[in-house]
Length: 80
View 1: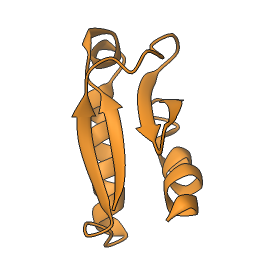
View 2: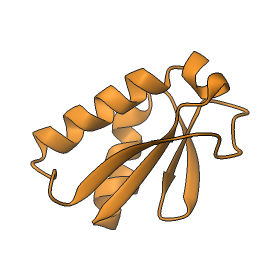
View 3: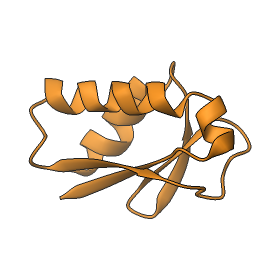
View 4: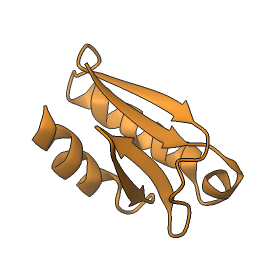
């Protein structure tokens, strides 16, 4: 099972972490991957400079509402 951790700490919360979580949940459901991907909230991942910090397999990316789809297709589906 692939785990996606999304920072919900104060900085990422202000940058839209809840919207990123919601969209990732929608994409996982749309692709029928609920049995292969788990989305978890996390506190600070240490990469709060740009956008919302998202961790997949020890790699942290900066994601926002406008880049979440691209992130999902490249960094999540590409690793399943």
